[in-house]
Image 1: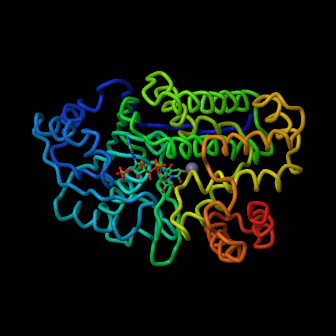
Image 2: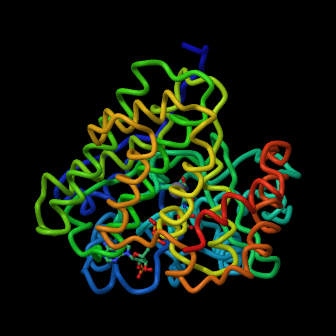
Image 3: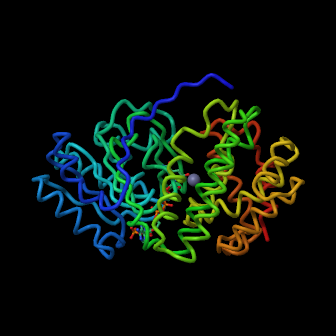
Length: 383
Ligand code: NZQ
Ligand code: ZN
């Protein structure tokens, strides 16, 4: 096992009705005024908005609203939030929604503490030195943002989708009520499952050494993600399936699964972010297109782990069958597996390559992921 340091300061409050405790939780932390960040319409339709407001009012917590966060959150909207947070002198961010809302909330938390242009942190030109505390009520289990120090934002002027990573932006407390995810559509449930699987397989395959324990944790998570998704798609209100899926998605990117793995990178995310930035496609849909294409290209570089994957997950004894099984499952749940399915023509590949290469440079992966390599991978995804 490789040496590691592990730090995860997020407190998780998990279970039925827990969102009603938000006011009391903030009060206990001596927070009196928050920026209430949310998405486009779901929390108003489901009644979560009303329950949160009631809990805040009951506990005398003042709030300034910042709604309208879009999926694949954009820099301009985050900057509006930063202005509000500064002008209104809020003490904390309360993000109620999925990964997009949480990520924009984290970005505002960073921006509110500095005079610098927040985009500089995403370009990795500046180091984050502080942030407002972030509190979360999760309504869509997928990204793991509720228990990690990452945030992803799209600069819509430059078509760049980049991330920040900092200990300051781990949420202080995240409230996870699986019931709040009953209304997530089958389509987004499929994207969520792909995303959570993506989070665990990146290091599993790219690590030059993966301890047995980590391989087994990862395989168990993938199995539970697949099995619970199958149940959820048939029975959206199955509490235990929603609950196990939710916790699996959190564990998939809270730091646990990558411990002790040597080397390891996030190439599928790098390419998926290029697709997201250029075509504003849902993150999970970008990944379901990229993953099988990348796997085919990468397989020979870590053959034994791909064979292991095929065996453990799908009871197959060769690497190619494992990839086909995973791709087949993505298809079965309604996630796209080719660029053609999302109307991205072959002629567009060049543009995607340029964009992905830009991310590779920021992530310092450009030596391995050259434009030629990226082209080869994306060509595997064309139809
Ligand atoms: O905007 P509203 O109306 O709330 O609707 C959302 C949105 O349309 C809807 N939704 C959320 N909760 C719902 C619901 N609909 C019905 N019932 C509910 N309970 O779902 C749609 C998608 O929401 P979004 O937040 O965009 O999805 P997700 O959680 O998948 O987040 C995706 C974003 O997170 C980034 C992605 O790149 C993308 O920008 N990621 C963040 C990561 C992180 N911070 O660690 C890691 C990931 O790899 C990922 O990159
Ligand atoms: Zn992801």
